[in-house]
Image (cartoon, rainbow, N blue to C red; front, side, top):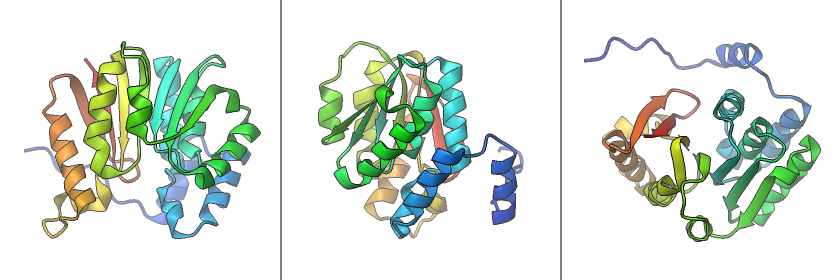
Length: 220
């Protein structure tokens, strides 16, 4: 058995402290947070600021030149990835909403990274199928419909280079993954995905207690 956990649930004051003692959102990011918040309850789909900072750092550490994002929403995660890339880097964003991604386009333009982002409005599996089949992708971020997590992963992994990374959001699902009373489609899909990647010999895997659970996979 593992040792007793050394992490804890964040209170609002601790979360504020945590964000302030990392790289906090700048003016463009803060404006995007506020604009997304004005959408109401759906705003919970936006990643947390500390997750965005982590993704920017990881992008820089990996020297990412080619990245793919599945599920863009209002563009905060794409902004964080794009900011970690060199000016000649390219991020393909897959989404189906013109409405939400219109907000994203504004933020990307304000941040000066719009030229690094190729937004494709179409079902993500169709966009993936049209990508080159060689191992050219440095970083993937998956944050879309949970029922297709395994399908996105299987379609993208062969296209990820050795030592490339896949990030998958919401893999703790507010704790529902261990709640025997939760058997809705999304929860069941996330459980199955977590079990699958933990046993996949093609990758090294760690689940991080960042925001709603962020799984980091390294292609062997």
